[in-house]
Length: 522
Image (cartoon, rainbow, N blue to C red; front, side, top):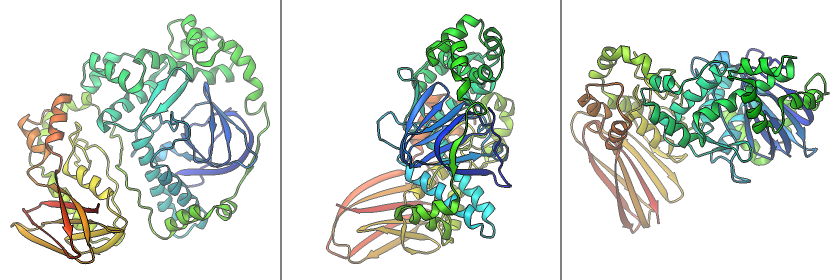
């Protein structure tokens, strides 16, 4: 049942297929399925999915899955990730749970075009094999994983139709926390799992974590653990002659009766019946009816919009404007013994200076890419967008503003950048001196009514200043974290102006102050 993936020197493997029937099988690495054309039926553990054009689905390690073509013209891309290669940057990837299903029929992720563009650019790069293409492929793969961590981890268990219903990503800190809990469940399901032990690792009360899990997952911790054990039991059930009682023990159930009850709930039948009914559907017992499609053939058949996406990615690096949601693998339990180290790390640390350094580097680059950064700081490193315990640093807000820049660059220098989209403009500028500085921008041919939105990132609005008042205590409460983050957001102001054609915009900035201004025509 196991199919090994040959990566051929790259950290990813891409297969493109037209499928009639691909029998049930498993992989040891996660795999993304993207439907470029047509329709297929996907069997994934206890659920069958009807996937159509531009649908995305993620298969996790050791998940039994199989595919059948619904339309003859289906064209499916399979993207496999070599976990060993990405383990350092994405330490939970081996057991991370992602969901690509939207509960509303026909709806897709808002960033679905970005996923497609990234995927097709990867295919184009692997096909061209230009000098240095390996590093380009690796960067695109990291961009794809960043998107998956950002937008594919938020879901709820739907017991009515046995699906995971994807949700819009919420609070990043809580999403990361639940992600760690889910990864822990799947890594340790054969053993006794205690919510109290996990809560202690997270620095939370058992009551708080229980309610957080229920609210975010739509089911209790205990029910989810039982579901995970049933899910993982299918491999042993279909690949061995082990008794139901023995499988139950291997999965961590206290008795076989409880295992059978849960299996019936999720699979709709007794595990013994599922074993008998499924033998002729497993790879090796059923033929593979699928045609492999070459990269060259695929690129020739893409429509105009897809070609634009692919070949723009070939000429310059793809601009993936996403937060790096790398999980640093640090739990509060491991940090509590390093209180002094954490205090020393942040005591004389100036997070605002990171923003100034980034802007100086950013405004010198012609491509205006946003460099990837880990989400969290770790002990000994302040490279993250958030502190060790989830406080949002100025660099978090700056990168969020940079992600919203228009693609059309009208003017730039070492201290400012002006972007435009139709009649709308954006101005990013900052004072890199040690004294207050006056700035003036004069625009012509801008007649009309405009709404001006200003975002000010100031040195005094810094999370570490408030955290210092708590003596850099690692295990701050959720209420304290939210209060600090709320007080350290950029200052925002609005005003409306009427321009007869010539528009002058001026500001006086304090040393180190950063301003992002957007003028939208009403």
